[in-house]
Image 1 (tube, helix red, strand yellow):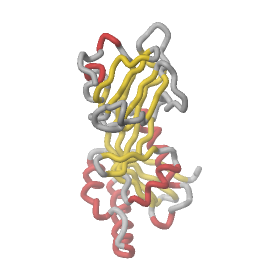
Image 2 (tube, one colour):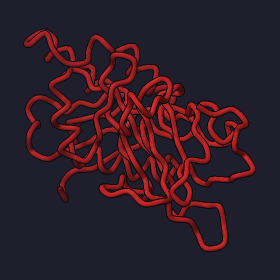
Image 3 (tube, rainbow, N blue to C red):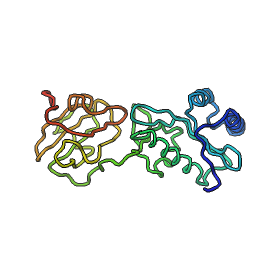
Image 4 (cartoon, rainbow, N blue to C red):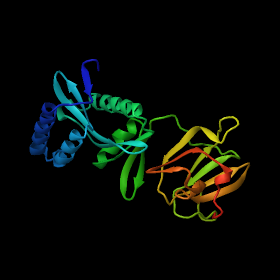
Length: 242
């Protein structure tokens, strides 16, 4: 990939090149992202367009924007003549490096069309459902890994509304690891979550807090499209629990 260049500040001429091949793709196949041209222009004007250049020709682009804790990829496409050659993955990886430099904790996107799911999974994205849409997610920092075996000190995530131990089994588990002498996790938990999903904190084998994500730890954890837990504090346990 030594002959490909990634440009984070494309010009209007680059934008025109993209428009030309999107129009051509739309006319030939009735596919592609020319239908989203206004969105592409909007993000270009907001410096939210990354392009791949090969032999002085624009062969791919990513439209993105930053949220408070994440980067969101809105559109990603490679010119039809240059697909399945590794250029798309190279462009994505360089974009992820850029997002990391801007302190994004994770990246997410809406998989459209659905046929793109396999590709995003192949480069390390996790698929999840968010209000009827298939989303893809990837942490950009080191996170606490989902556990295969449980310990007496753990966080459980129930991907449902309301917790009933007689009706639900745990969806996901993280065995807790704290920095010595602190309430901070060695690595944060970052995972896709709805605000009404339920978290349960088990300490020394006993449940000490169970609540919806949006209320857990008295709202001291971060809730966006992902739940982000950096620390756990018994002083922040809600009086109310399931």
